[in-house]
Image (tube, rainbow, N blue to C red; front, side, top):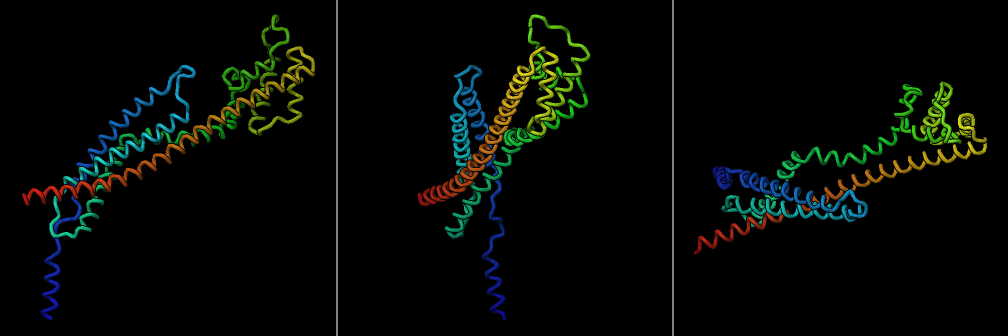
Length: 302
């Protein structure tokens, strides 16, 4: 019985009362990593601005810009995480009476914790900008889906008086452009009614995704009545305008899809760079701790 108590007391005496986590070096390494990240991100922004230009042909291609941004994100994580992890390992207090494998694990964990804290600090600084960039693709896609319904509601609420402010205003003007452009009379009440009808037809057709044959024939009659064109020429004009509307819609969809893909790519590359940063910080923490212990051992022997 006494022997068992003695064994317990002896084993308890070998336990250290101090924590295995040294928060001082972790915080110091995290601040160093976060500061270097901010500096490198500003440098990257400056380099990125040199690659774009409002002049045609003077900017780098989208692929070149995207690849350069992805590589720079990884470089930023590599350098900042390496610095933060290394400082964390070098600044921590030497653990006495600990197995080498446990020391290696603790140094690795300290480097990882420094990276995690630095990531939170940087996220607090750039959080809003990153959220806006990642959400741009999703927002653009939702705008395309909701655009037709919003346009239909606006047109129905505002009537013919809102034609000039409607996105379809240009196409409506193109529909009712007089055949004799040298003799353009002011639009009367009847003209305003025709314009309102055409607007509602085009907005409703955009919401449905197609223009029915009856609506197309009626549009041709309205155009012929308003412009003095023959029925055949009016039908051709309707087809031309509808093709222009479809082309504009396809361009809007393409722009939204490009923004969505850019947002997805940025998110994936950002996640990859963070994984690289976590690995580098862990390795740098172990390297810094080992070098600290070796230097201290040489100093003691010397």
